[in-house]
Length: 265
Image (tube, rainbow, N blue to C red):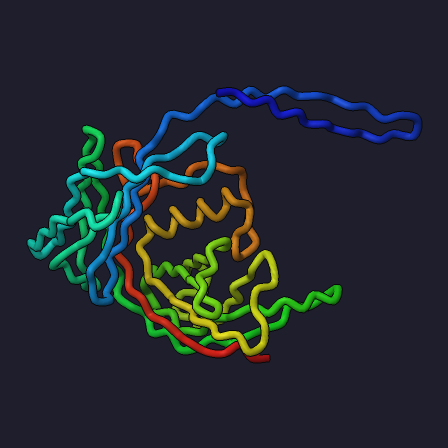
C-alpha cells in the first residue's frame, strides 16, 4: 500500500509568495517481531510480550504472536521456561530478580531465535518527590521532581514512571544518566508536554535503575518522538534494541524503588 503526502512550503517575499508540492511515496513495511520483557528485584512472576508490528497505514493494534518458546536464564544457573498465559503474553514461574545478576532471554517465534541480555544494576535509594511550578508567560504547569543521592564513581542510569490517581502516564519518557552529576544529590523535574498534575492528586513515581543498553533504547525512543523529558530532540528512527535478529523492543533487568505522595505546592 502506498500513500502520497503533499507538503506545501510557503516563502513570503516583498512582492509574491511561491508554493512547492513534494510527493513522498511511503511503501508498506515488512512486519517485525516486537518483544518487550522485564525482570525486576520485586517479587515475580515477570512477563514477556511478543507481538507483530503493523504498517503505518494500519491502526495501533499489534497482533499477538502465540506458540513461541520463551526462556529466561541467569548467571547462577536458573532456567525458567515461560508459559503463555494470554495471547502473546509469557509468564515466569520460578525466577527471582536479583541486583548484580545477568539475565538472558531466548525466544523462538516464527522460526527465528531471538536473544537478549541485561544485567540488573544495584538499587539507589529514592528519597522523596517534591513539586515545582513552571514559570514564565503565565505557565502554571506543575512538575514532579525526584530527589536522590547518586553513588559516586559508578555509572548509573535511571528511568522514571509516573502514576496519577492510579493511572500511568505513557506519553512521556523520562530517562537520566549521571554523566554530569556523578556523586551529586539529584533533584530533576519530570517535564511533561502538557499539564497533568493538579494540587491534591495522588502521585506515585517509580525509579528504575537500568543498564546502559536500556537507557540508550529509551533515550533514542524519546528523541524519535520529539518530546525528550530534558528538552532534546532528534529525527524519528527506530531505537537501538538489545534484542538480536532484527526484533524490535527491549529486555530489561532493573531495580524498582517507589515514592507515593500527594501533589502540593
